[in-house]
Every structure is written in C-alpha cells, then in structure tokens.
Length: 282
Image (cartoon, rainbow, N blue to C red; front, side, top):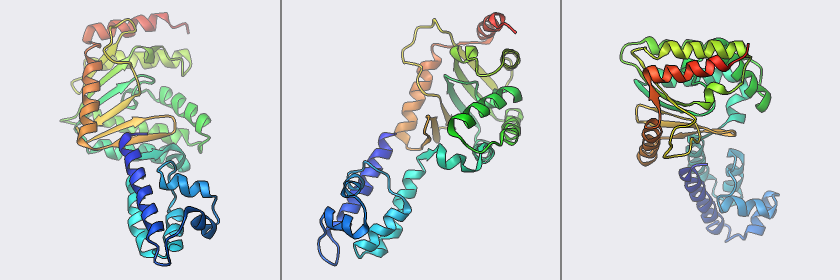
C-alpha cells in the first residue's frame, strides 16, 4: 500500500482514539469500548493504530458507542478518502470485469496523453480481442469474479477508439518479457505480436521495448499508467492504487523516464518483436 494511504489510515485511527478518550459519558479504555461493541480488544487496538481498515459499519458503531454519533459523517468521509486511493479488486470485481473496464474507459476518454509502463502484459489499448480474452480469463480464475469475459473484451476493444481521436498520445514502454509471456495459445500470441509490429508507425503511439539484455538504472517493477500528469494508477494483486498527489506523480514520471531510457524504438523495437515472434512454435 502507498505511504499516503498508510498515513491517512493512521490519521483515521488517531481520530478514533480521540473519540474514545473524549466520550461524553466518560473516558473509555480500549477494553471497555470493546466490551460495549462486542468486539475483541485487538480490533480496537488495530483500528486505533492504523493497522486495520474499518468499514462504514465499524465507524458508525464506534461513534454511537462513544456517544458521539454526529462524528460519523466525518469518519465516513475519511474512509471514502482511503477508498479513493486503494480500490480493492474484491470490491471492484463484484459485478465482473465489464463495469471495471467501462470505468477505465470513461477515465481515459478525458485524457489526452498517457504514459504507461508494462512489465507483465501488453497494455489494454494495444491488445487484440483474443489476447484480451485470455488475460480476462486468467484473472477471473484467480479472483473468482463473475464470468463476463465477452462483455469485458468488447468494452476493452471499444476503448481502443481513443487511439484514433485527434490530439491523443500514447507513450508506452514495455519490458521484453511481456512479449514472451505465454498467457495465451501460441497463435494468439503471434497475432498479438503482429498487432504490435503494426502500431510502431502510428502517429498517436510511441512504443518502446526494453530488451532483456538492456542496462537498467531501475528494476522493472510494477506496471503503472499516468494520465495527463494528474493521476497515476498502479496495479497490484490485491488492488489498484489511484495516486493523485503532485509529489507521487512526479516520482512515477521520473520512474517512467528512467525506464524509457533503456528502451529501443522504431525499427529497433520492431526487430525485438520480430525476434520473439520467430521463436514461437505454433
């Protein structure tokens, strides 16, 4: 989780402790509050020390139990602030991948320039339908989410219309390992590599490949996307991080610029893609 998220959760915990200590009915110990709520005392400690994220229900119960029900709106607003930064896949995928993809489509539609670093899969804006289908199926199995693969694929392919709109620009740098990843049948991967070969000359796309033997100034860590310098979205196994503070955005821009220095472009990028393609046995 991000440092900003941890800091905000710790602040929420301190506020909960204040409410316990300033209860109009008399100062409460953690044990007394736990008994009043029917919770284990360890939960009180974890919430106050920022080691556990409360639910809205937890916050309402806390406000009521400390005789400060009016504090609930403030506590709930703080919790929503946490959720705006960390979006768990469990919650996001409750209705399947299509709603998540459509939210992403709306977010990107407002953007003019995107900077992407990809170290695991081809970015969605450049995926073929068959490759996208394989990726969605893998994540549906992992996260045990509702199966809406075909709807999700259609939504992802619709997103690619963005590439053909005036004034749009996709700056994408990919780790060569992405090209080798056998997430799909060999014929699907071949077609995906053909797609990448074809986008190298597009006016709206600047594609860089970081070769496996390139000298690196940073490890090729988590994939991320930066939208117009206003938002960074980082994908992890448990959640997406949506980061919008200026200092963090500047950090991710430095990361992207540094990784981009190790990439090859144009004809050299096509040569890397073609070399991988020749190695695939269909």
